[in-house]
Image (cartoon, rainbow, N blue to C red; front, side):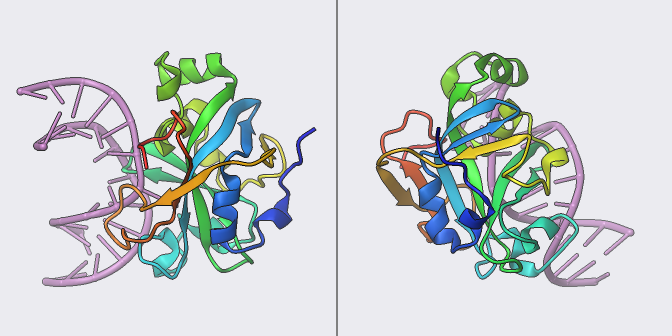
Length: 187
DNA sequence: TGCCCGATTAACT
DNA sequence: GTTAATCGGGCAA
């Protein structure tokens, strides 16, 4: 049985946690797969939602680590983050892509596409495929509907600039599995 | 209060 | 390559 990631796993620097999440497995109500792409955000750099301080939307980021922060992107999509570091540091890891393993039929139904590479390759697509909305905002990651397991064995992790941002775009805080066909974009 | 922009995606030309 | 969809936050007025 794979090791569950508990709250203590997230009580560290977001820069340690983010690359370790590559190869971990995430399921929401039994639907999910292997994480292949994430990005780190920290309140000290202007691309983070928490940079300007607490608001109603980002309140979860200012709470304890090990919880889900879900926000609406461009008024249309949902994006999932894992809150990291000691409470109040307001840092998080954006879950950008995963390799589907369980619940392919549910993913295809929710997404309206059949190509397995288009199911979860992107933060908005991933949330749609896993059924994640604002209802999951603030939920603990070590309790239903979430299941999160540490990776088994070595994973070839690469890093590069984050995607879709204009502020602090030079920081290489995007992490992914080298050569994965399920990335939102190649490194 | 109004305006602009954004951690996106899909459907265009 | 460009653009629409659509909404919360920051900031100027």
